[in-house]
Amino acid sequence: MTTVSANRANKEKLVEAFGSEVQDASIIVVTQQVGLNADQTRDLRVAFRKEEVGFKVGKNTLIKLALKDSPFAAIGKYLQGPTALAFSKDPVAAARVAVEFAKKNDKLKIVGAAMGDQLLDEAQTKALASLPSLDQLRGKIIGLLLAPATKVAGVLQAPAGQLARVLSARSKQEA
Image (cartoon, rainbow, N blue to C red; front, side):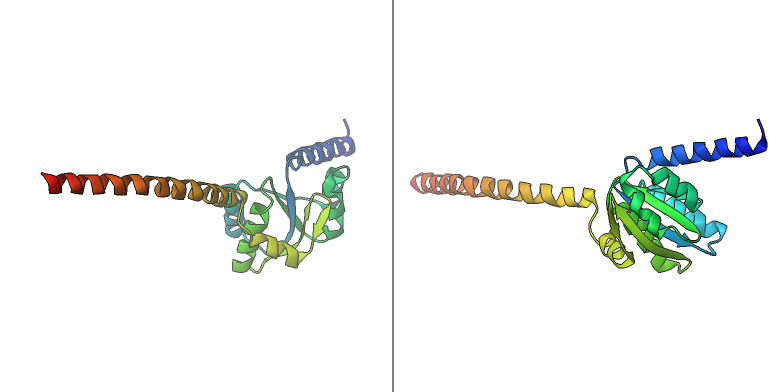
């Protein structure tokens, strides 16, 4: 096998691997990272991993090939310069972690994002990052659903408790 065909085979594997990684993603955030040192890059990757967010640095042409037949194909518009992609199943997690890191480090720039075929610019991506995560929303919904049930139980128990106290007081008076 020649070097050219081996290189092509490696690139095809990279394209296929990246395409399968983002297959289940609900969002891809496009960032540019110029000048991040090794420690900063490690901190960024750790932050992404902690929130179950994938993070890939790659050649724009290979990224475009990987996303060509996916709902994220329109993101090719944002792929210019040194590009890194953050992606997650949670539609807020990737944006939130990237935006929080970019606030602390000006060497990471948010370019935009895609949620399926819907493109988001930098401002929209930052606005999305301020929303609560899916787990936080689920917790709030469960709390809202449980609150009325506990209030109803409290209201139903109150008259019975009052009746028991009245009967107890009455029996103590007669005794």
